[in-house]
Length: 369
Image (tube, rainbow, N blue to C red; front, side):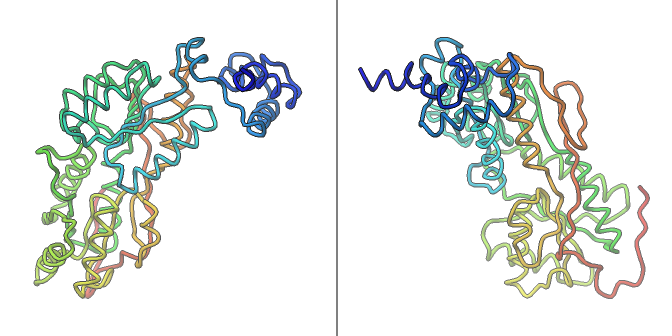
């Protein structure tokens, strides 16, 4: 009985005493209700510090009965192993921790049995809302099952996911603008032949939504500017990638630059070039998309299209938590286009060492915007 009291009434009173505030103030702060009754940031910080010092946590079951909330969100990732996903998860966890929320993570690449389990684990009585990262509908083994999971929830926010009626807010990067930015940069350096290096084949027939947008933007660009089309499907097998890359760049008519559909594919291309005797950027300039951590760590540093992953992750998580709490969504910061339930972040070009003018180039290609 004594330990039970420490975890409930006496615990919250101890926190209130240490922080120098009332029990009701502690309850409002720790149960994420401070926005309804104004509480100063200093008081909020003092309460949270006191709770941390005393290792006090509100009783989740009792809190759920009082508020009909679980203080937990579900996150479904397209690919848990991708560096892009890891960076997003770090931001999501940080926001949720600051707002006293827990996170349950699921993987979209499920078999049918696991999809049922995922639906049970992330059911509305276990999580207050869902955050989708990547094209989870494309990667689900059973898309209809995944649609059913989404339809069960009132609050669903997606990042980089194809349009879905069940999603209440969709956040994405302007993929077409990013591709055009990369290709204009390469053309400005003098490259007249620019290859497109796509993702490895997927288990499904459709190209992932973001990949399709980037692929289409490449085709529109080269068509509009009268450039030759060079397309190569990447592979995770280094030996095969080496052979493919050699065939691509050997010969009098060859691409002098390549746009990789994402940074992971670009890094694989850099590795294949290095081990094939192809010099980047002298023999081949390479541009990626995403600006993951590996992009700046690789040698040569990868020129890439930057997605503001931290800003997108923070906005997506806060928007979901605000919607769950019945609060108005704040407007996103930075260069962002808002159209109804769609929020589109603007990309930027990051120039590093993987690009240069083509060798033996005698003039500069002029492309009209």
